[in-house]
Image (cartoon, rainbow, N blue to C red):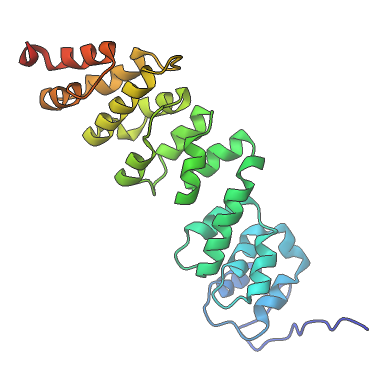
Length: 240
């Protein structure tokens, strides 16, 4: 039994390459009202396999059938997958499946790919990136534009790793009093481990920017003698 070929004829302005210029085709992919069968026909184009950005628009289209969406998501590299996960206009199922595939694919990514993805990563990937032994992955996560204060505080749990401490020291969160307070409390627990990977020097950038009142408040809850002494010295005469 022969497989029936899809109908590739559509009323203007709808059409397909090569009869339709690729630029116009891309504009049509973003329209919410494709005719029945157009998305399925577009997905059969051989040249589309070389254009994952265009496959992305079909996979995330609100009118794409579920079976087509699942098949195309399985063919996408991580970058267009991350774009789908972040696009509020994408079908909710497409966004959820993209996030799931990104989480599943994280272990197979190279360090360079993880660094690039952590800058774009949706929230379900944050903890994976945060636990990376590579400081570059963690540093890019801290510059992720979707990372808010509450998300940052949720990640800051002891013990801190060396990669986390190094990335935090050069992060945009250095000026946040709430982050500084939680970082120092996490370092307190980390420095108190039997074999700590951190040293007191890792706390210095966070102590340097503390105001007196905050330093007094944080010092009162610190147990590690050396760290408590450094924070108390920042408070100066107010603790004498």
